[in-house]
Length: 390
Ligand SMILES: *Cc1c(COP(=O)(O)O)cnc(C)c1O
Image 1 (cartoon, rainbow, N blue to C red):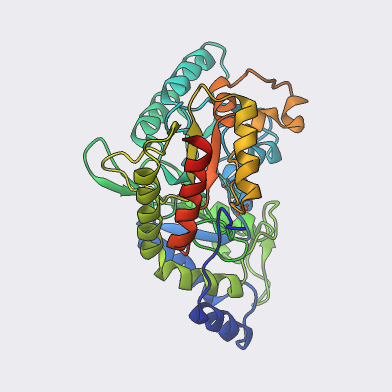
Image 2: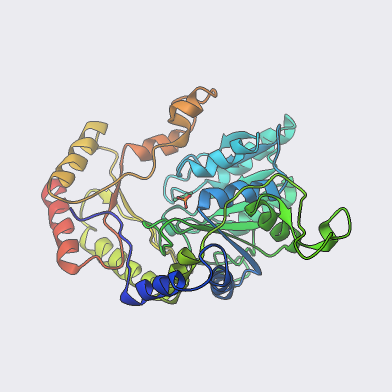
């Protein structure tokens, strides 16, 4: 089976992990700091906190921004469940903003409309979590402008988008993770993502206070900083728990792997873009939409998603999907609209609430996309698609 995604692990990566195993530190230590610094250097964000998953990073980012019971948090329905769950962990009320039918990202028009309505009913969100779907950056300049007008905070779920960048409305190139238009940016290092640490995530921010809180929540709410303590230290062993945090730490073995992978990030992005361009060129005559690749934007191409034309039925979609799998092509579907999961339905969401995300779900197919996808395999995917769709 040609998978839809696959990690790339080199001999050097293995050596780096082995070196940690032979060192004094296994848990969070010098490699975690080194990995955090490499992401800071790459993205241009100021502070980074490595954790054990993007889900954890989303959770403690929400907490650091003060999300609590009764607050509203909005995200896209076309995402992995974590982008929504993180708000529920904090006791907040979660709502969705429907997607744009062409970018599959949160629609700015829908967002603006929903904000106008929410203002009237006094239910404005505390935090909005845009998701850079497949690596294609959301219109962050616009979301940032709206955040000023409607006073909400922004967490970018950039689980797909380390290495992506976009042009601001002032024509400046902005890297995802620089937090130019957000309070926090979150990355995932799950093996299917752009770079991996086995499991892992990171929260990047330009705000020192937010960073301090995120780091506090990463380790039980414990501080060793005298300035944050309620009394003078009892001695060199002393620490205080000043809030309720978690053990969300990344370990040094994971960080060593992540640090190695960061060195290859640019080459990964280049390879993914080459693969995407080749797909788009070869598939252009088929009755499908290929992903947008707008000028001024670099997508990490975490995913390469085609959508069948409108004349294909739900049944056609299923048939094509099954045929591709039967041919050893590990196509996948990103994502089941989050609001249609039973957990969210029992909260009151129902089919028809976010039409664009639901329509998309009946047409989308994620094709194999990873840096080591070999030409023969990609040609095989293309040939098979042509057979079934032409
Ligand atoms: C993968 C993913 C997550 C969760 O990442 P983990 O590191 O597995 O917790 C969250 N949001 C999106 C959009 C993702 O794709």
